[in-house]
Image (cartoon, rainbow, N blue to C red; front, side, top):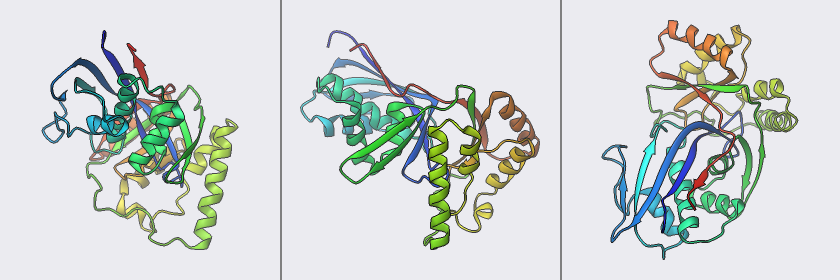
Length: 291
């Protein structure tokens, strides 16, 4: 390899509205991997904590070798502002980086559809992988072998206020174990309108559909009280589009920068326990430089 390869992958969120394992979005927080010289063994340099391996057990390397087991070890340097384990796709970014690195080092000439299919098989669903690779909002279907994905653009003025809950949510059940036929129809109808609104650039209608709660547990506001607090304050400001991330580790609200700054100011007065971050939407998806 004559020069370094730099892979940059955006953070993602899934579970917009009732679009479980289907609708994903990418955000302007990035997981960057620099592919450096060939080594005797894989070496992954990072400052992500002791729980993240530095060797061939790292998820990036494992993904590279799943895609092409013949690729020789290299030194990789990782820099990331995607919070680990907070529902913003930290593992997805590593998987997508691994696919991109394998494609570059192995000269595999994979198409974006190929990369989405590979990532979907690794993750078991396509929403996060598709958004990380393509940017913006994507709508995907995955049958276990092949993913079908459509991308649509979010208006440039739209940002996201992301509230990271203090509780990691690992023991919380946020979706109903069984969904009645009435709730199934409500969720399906809302998701159909959500997707149609996104595709026709009717953002106001889309944000209203994002708040459909038909598949949440009936006591969702008791399980995640921050969702009710943020949604109530947002509605008082005329802001719609607050939903609970599929990982149930963060609550996300869409709006303009001005609207979200007003909302953040209000929520700061309420002294929520978690962390709030105003984040831009990523419109480009994963990038590769230096090939």
